[in-house]
Length: 374
Ligand code: SF4
Image 1 (cartoon, rainbow, N blue to C red):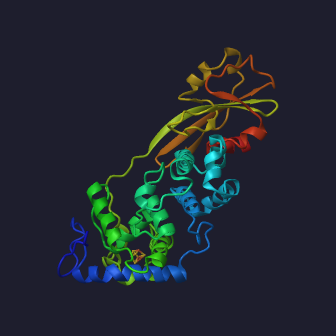
Image 2 (spheres, helix red, strand yellow):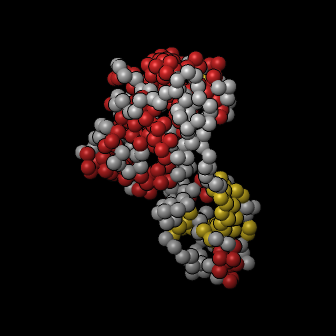
Image 3 (cartoon, protein in one colour):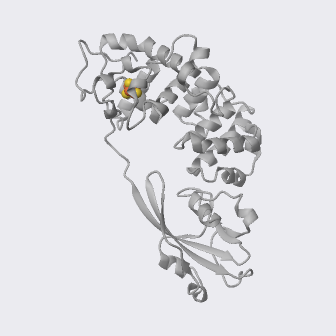
């Protein structure tokens, strides 16, 4: 798609058009990519552990880990994963529980399950080699358009645009894109525009650098609340800045509503330290992880216990664990049992007693691991 253009100055901010003058569009198309690539060379990030490689396994692993997760959190996990699974074949061959255990604490566990399935598909369907185009990469589990574009541009210099949250912010500000990104049509228009702005020459060197540059710009300068426009390498091109209020972009009217959920947790522990953990169903909160038995209410928890044990429960102060779109209000009830309680306690579900040496390597939800570690 060619960039939509208006004649003779910027259109009003509520215009459904992409707001570009002829002159700005002409200047943006080569200039934005050139300036971004130059800036990335001199000021961008170069020393993150997953940079300076064209190995698709490493790039893929980092891209999946970085979804919804801060760079600082990912670094240790990334290093540990690579130490344990240096190749995609080794990851594919690992037991699922080991993968979930190493992922434990990173959250969004469907990513870990997809990671494992994806590694298995790469080995089974592609002979252990990642496909080399964004279109083919998207056929693998857990790889969406943006992740596929990141792998294809970093590793194979494909001219394809990423469009994660940081990049959306940079591009909508740069072009004062006033379309509502709740609409699929506007999202598609932005994607077309992102493609239009990509480098057109020296792709082998410039595509990886451009992709890294736009990520770096969004993460370090064009930040969500207070963009550091005076430091920005493309400030002279930026229509959002020229409008006087770059923070108004991106425009997204439909916000995901947060919800809350209260759960009671049975923290049953033997005097020798072993804890009772059950595997959660594959879908839903904490899918596939090991967890204390979970109940919708305290009454349901009590009903699951023999009357003789109900009086031994000790309430642990409730706390809130925040997920992206949900607040979990967790109320653990602790039950200390002798070291051989099998006859006294009949817990349902796919569970077992795990000693300390065992549960530390299991995939556990972050709040459960924290309770046990304390
Ligand atoms: Fe973002 Fe400001 Fe740069 Fe525009 S000038 S891209 S708003 S940091």
